[in-house]
Length: 106
Image (cartoon, rainbow, N blue to C red):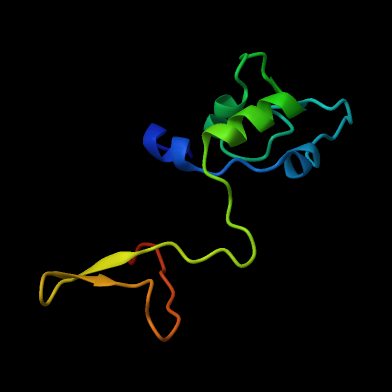
């Protein structure tokens, strides 16, 4: 699966601890073979195109993309379109929690 470039630039980059856990040969460099995710994300992190990810490259990529959510972060402001009234409905300030489920129905 290859993600669209616009979506790719908005993805949070995992921290070094998570990326380093993939380092099966323990050489402090992550190869594409060791990286078990979308190759497009690997290419986004691999800024010098040497087919290896280093600590410095992960840190630089994390500065250019949004940080992953942390515990106790406020929920993002979300709005849905009410198809009956054709009006926006804010979802972030509701009294009860809700879940967004994405998928396909066949």
